[in-house]
Image (cartoon, rainbow over all chains, first blue to last red; front, side, top):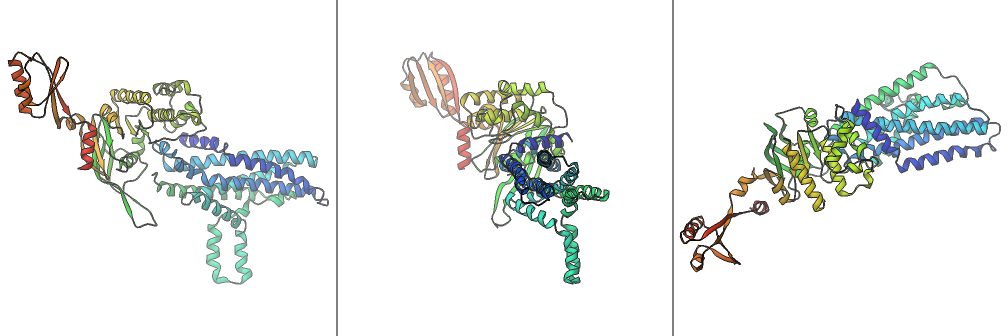
Length: 255
Length: 300
């Protein structure tokens, strides 16, 4: 456990210095602040539009972080040859993979907290009060990006960072729509496709379980089952992906 | 006891999209005994680094076996091993002590802060412990590389080109350090291009050519076998013309040297000199240097 913690803390410390992250954070801050431009054009809906836009920005910048930094995190170690002095020490492949995964996850938590604080302060300043109900979205974001982080790491085990980045983006957007797959078979009246669609439905990550933005913005109560589903689905799926990542990673050689 | 035992080691590099296969190592056999300083020599691309990476678990052998301490589990073996890679690179955002602290946490035991500072002192980086790695010179990177290899007080040190890129002072200091570490009973396996350094540090060497071990043995035995000629230093002989039939004559002031490559002539001339009232100051056999051996093995 000490080894995983050491690798994860080091990964976090290294990633936080990444110039890409700094650019993303500044852009994130500016875009959250830019939501103010919607106030004059939103007839009586300013509160909702600003909240919706702000939550969207937090999600978008978390996504960029995973795609731009997360998919490079394993590759960089090999490319810069820092891996030699780590893997020649008594470190197992899975300990290294879990350590890198956690390090990146600390970074995502850090970014989401920072962006959320900016967002909350912004709503306090422009909307005249803090909407604490928004924090529910943070809970779902944390589990959504736990899963996306594991997915990015898994894909980067056997592809280049660019390919892994594109695939991660694709999986994220497809994952928002997987719940429509089953409806598609019914609407299109194609029962013969049902086994394939069912297979895809179960194998592809379903990110819609984390989408509570509308409920949060419109103050619609979120059931306890949704909290539990988001937690259990994310942890279980991520664990499977991390186990697979460790297996793929153990096949790697450091030439 | 044998610390490393390698039998019929083969490493094939192949690309999934190319049919061509390259042999990194091709049927290599070698062993390193406890307390030895073993030097792995060979031209570029001979397979030295591949062998070291297989031993440290960074590469997997295609066939053959590598046994550490008689077949110890790799993770347990790694706890007893320190590795300095060729042209090492480290996390640039950390300083010297932070880097060692990070590596020490990769072992299951807790390393005290004083122990880490001692290691940094040993490699000559005590005053730079709070300096960022990104500001280190090449020589300092090599030293911190030694330092991370010393963490956990390993019984076996594997050093890939440990003296490359260093200035003469740095080379001398790190050479002394290797010898000091070896004198404390640790086993050292190193690869190097600098043959004079290997000659000074190692007691056993192996020469790898195209992935195969071409020559292996104790340095003194390898060097002993080929006496090219003997220089005899004499004095007290006035008429020297007769000496010419025993070898080349060379006079440097009062001192005369005879260089002979024939053992019979050597013994005979020594006997005659003493009989004629002269004295033999020294008899120095001139052996082939490791470099000459190396070149001979490469072109054989």
